[in-house]
Amino acid sequence: MKSILTLLIVAFNLFVGVSLLEASVALAAPVHGVALYGEPKYPAGFAAFDYVNLKAPKGGRLAQAAFASFDTFNPFVINGVPAPGIGLLYDTLMKQSLDEPFSLYGLVAETIDIADDRSSVAFRLNPKARFSDGTPIIADDVVFSFEMLRDKGLPMYRAYYRDVLDVSAPDKQTVVFNLSKETNRELPLILGELPVLSKAWWQNRDFTQTSLEIPVTSGPYRIKAFQPGRFIVYERNPSYWAKDLNVNQGAYNFDEIQFDVYRDTTVAVEAFKAGLIDVRLENEAKKWATFIQTDLVQSGRVKTGVFPHHMPAGMQGFIFNLRRPIFQDIRVRQALGYAFDFNWTNKNLFFNAYKRTESYFENSFLKAPPSPNQDELALLEPIRSYIPESVFTESYEAPEHTGNIRWNLGQALELLDDAGWRVYRGVLMNKTGEPFRFEILLDSSSSGTWERVLLPFVDRLKRIGIMAEIRVVDPIQYKNRLDSFDYDMIVGVWGQSFSPGNEQRYFWGSAAADTEGSWNFSGIQNKGVDALIDAVVRADTRQDHLTAVHALDRVLLHLHLVIPHWYAPAHRYLFWNKFGLPNQVPIKGTDLLLWWDKNAEKSALANGERH
Image 1 (cartoon, rainbow, N blue to C red):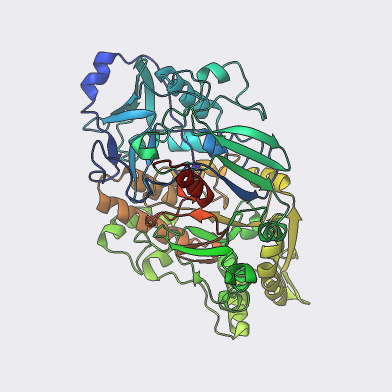
Image 2: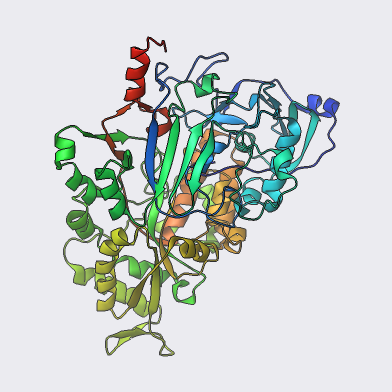
């Protein structure tokens, strides 16, 4: 799962009724941490993660921008728009390290116990674990959390945890999950990322509805103040039970974290210049190149940070909605790719700051090699009738433009002609005289950025008779249309981790295509893709997993579900010169929750405080 889950918060299948004796027979031995493959980096009793600053002082505040209003403090259901930063309220059973591909260490659960045959997993809760109201976190809360997420939560939870058979709470500190006999190596770790909810607080409330009632929570922060459409302020909970745990050392240093809501990025940039915002993750190359020349940076009042990371870049692009008949022919989708000129865009809009994306796992070893090896072919041959023949005969390459746009548009017209589309009096039509017309849906909070990219693309489409219209809607309407798949094309992204697994069902699985609120934005329903997702999830060795990911990547590319965009193997930050940062940047990139306010450091030194 991607935290906040990075987004992603977890869910399971519950069934009460496994006795303590049955659980003990199934399990192996409890451990402090677990890795997807091999052993975790940090031994039992470790003091802290290597990438934190143990001397980081507590205090100060961090102000950031958000670009959509909110109407709920429940991020786990499809209804409503959750408040920015809401993940600060919730702890999970275990916590990921940032310097390993996928390893977890004890948090609410102090140990994890996986059966040798991976048929079950047990978590032993830390007896010190408490909710924000001071009540103990017990096994019944974990069971309740699972039931709510499975039965009433976001649709992704059912996709993630369909291989959980049942769950029980043999005692107040122990939770046992029994798992399907089908291999799902990742599942015990995903269960470790279950967010813990308070049964006592939620059981008499409607979990599915939006609410701005401040909940009882399990994380390091609590809500101090808020006003929908304007701001939300979180304050560090001084009574947070896990503040001294090894996995939290050097983290959660700010007394307050505030998110202010802005209508668009241009207004947010001006707020940053005025000092109303402390830090910006700058994703726009033009804004970055322009800002670093300003007096604020040149004088040292604002600092810049380029933090390389080694995470898969994922896939960002113009996403076709295959639920629309106009995009169901693969030749049509491939043709439209020739109308997007990445080289021109990169040079004229982005200062040549980016590289072209040519993988759903770009910037990593998970990216499919140019041609499949024998192990890949063994996966691909049984599904040959469901996937493009080009998977076996061609290496995928995104269309390149060398300045001769007429050649590229000619290629597009050849493909469209093969698909039954002809230009008549400047309009591309099919055999029934229907014009080729579609809409590109944008969120108003980022429309200024994307219109610069889209307008030249729309103009090139017009040259081959295609009428594309840009439609801008407010963030709430955009979310509703996204959830119900009410669009022709969107600008979208699928993030990826070092350990692709169950979430791929949510991205590309056939069942997810008909599940409102899923991230199967393209609407792909393909039995071959479903089989490869199962191969990824069921892989029992690192090499089998890598082979399956390569095969999945290769097939997705040749299905032309998107017109790929670009990526940068680093995060670019602008921040006022008030922050201290750890010296080491882990492989997953910098984390603002490990930064600290230097004014707090000066205050601590002045008062003679020790770290």
